Image (cartoon, rainbow, N blue to C red; front, side, top):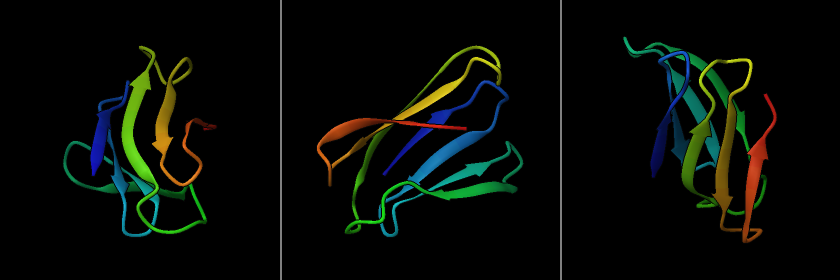
Length: 74
């Protein structure tokens, strides 16, 4: 449903089928998977990554189940 470019060059993608965020390398390797909402499917709508280094990076997404913007802790 949405994706964001991370400071390290990886891409984080939101899977609305199971509310997982997936991080991929530029070559397509899967780095990590994180469930961000245990409610009904389709919660992830829009992802934004801020920061210029992994140390100061923050990832936000809109949670349609909670009707809130959520900061993902790394």
